[in-house]
Length: 136
Image (cartoon, rainbow, N blue to C red; front, side, top):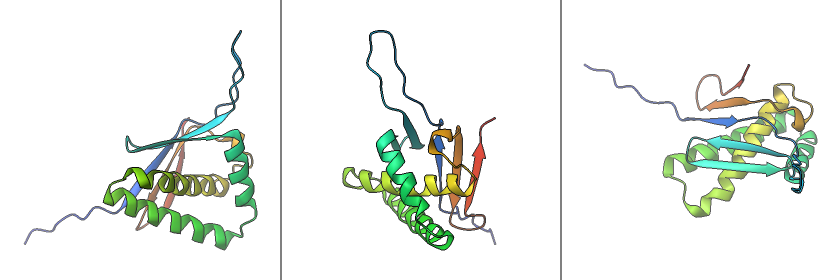
């Protein structure tokens, strides 16, 4: 009898870290931003306004609420990724990815979203649900 390997549903969010506003000679100032990627399937950016608003919203959550919200967003994102992202799902997927990522950063001890370092957040359905790895 041959045992089959069943892959645990999971995803990895990759972030190059917060990028502050940049001004070049003769060019306008661009807002700071935070980019997130889930492989080649989904790349999203939060500008300073969206990032500040989302971060403030996480501050209002209890630990239990944050855990519940993160898990619900992660499970929904896994479902969308397994079904294949359609154009209609992209905005939902971005919101779910941002929820999982920002709450993971808070639990990892980040107190200011402008201090988010280059990192990855791996979320798996079984075992250790969330793992944050910061680039050195």
